[in-house]
Length: 346
Image (cartoon, rainbow, N blue to C red; front, side, top):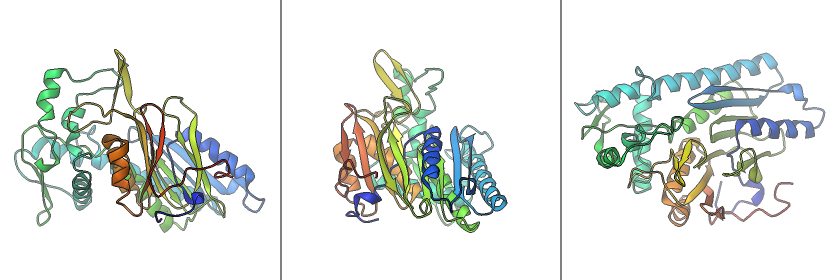
């Protein structure tokens, strides 16, 4: 996708999977009789600390269901590999031992960590997988956050330069005690990208795979664009912007995903590496482009960087675009987009 594509190719996704189901149902009712509703299959399951959903078109229901199960199996495999909540995951083993010396890791995880560090360089540290040094002390369900002493101490462990990779031996080492990594800002994008790869291998041409705020669209909806929307960051179930799209990756980071409020302050899961506290000045950042791994990481980066710096960054990336909503609810578009008008979604 180039910087000057028409508005009919705007691609955005941040709605809950419930809203995706509602949108999908509406779209299917509008399809001509040759594309029967029964030919569209889908399911949504709690996974990866969020919900993963797969919806696809298949003339053969049996083969379509096999493809869906294959995507969920792949999501489970990646979760077992990369979840910091699983003591036996590969990333948990790295967090336990890498400060003592290099830890041999599998090529898949090694390459994703390498991509994460590359994005850290690109974003001047706005994206930093060592945020978990502080992030581990937040529990949003229990409304817990690190006290000032813990925050000050753990903030010193946030720096992607402390993560040392050796491609010759496939090892990861930490250069400082107390460093932890967490791929939460990129792994769901990886899951949906892998999901679409699997669907392609199963002969599927039209589908959407979603994990939390990350989606990957395969093709269109049988000759017409998908309709998806950016959710309103302050009104659950409401869509702020709705646009048509096809064959794109879409990721949204928002301060409404995991948060609690205390004394007028919203404590959410998107950590500002420079301070160790929640990033401010934004409600949501949506990025879309050809690769869900990149859109996932960039949506976090843009949120952390803020409107001006974030959209300036996107302006340097020819295949990626962004729409952000700031703390006052104002909407901003990257330079390659034209603001949708009333007929953009028709």
